[in-house]
Image (cartoon, rainbow, N blue to C red; front, side, top):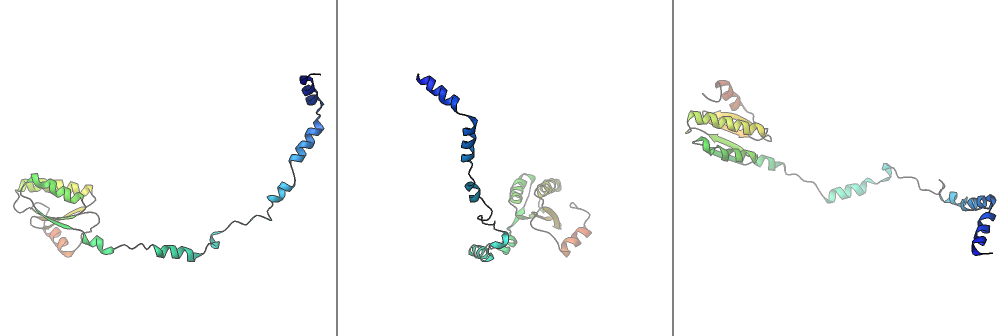
Length: 163
């Protein structure tokens, strides 16, 4: 008998009962005991966590915001004599600064073009532009609201921006 015959006899002699026994031996009931619900820890709920540990970590890193910083928005005074200087005012507005614009020495046609251009810049930045005197305007970013009796009086007296 050769080696191949021995292997063939070994394979052919194995019957299904021994295979079933082997499978039953692999599946052991003791494995079920390790995963039983009695030995498992219950899941922690939100109420199990202490609030003292959370408050101590919060108080160690305070989130302090200076509320006065928003009131310290820089105000820039600009006096324009011609339309070619309007870009410098637009740059200041894009930096979210308040601009007080004086157009007393500017010709009427240039004043109209300047106000039109700066109204577009203010609109793009969600800001506001108001006339505060004859040829003086205030242009504010969206973080600075404009209100007051003087502004309402000027708006009610004047017919528009260009009198």
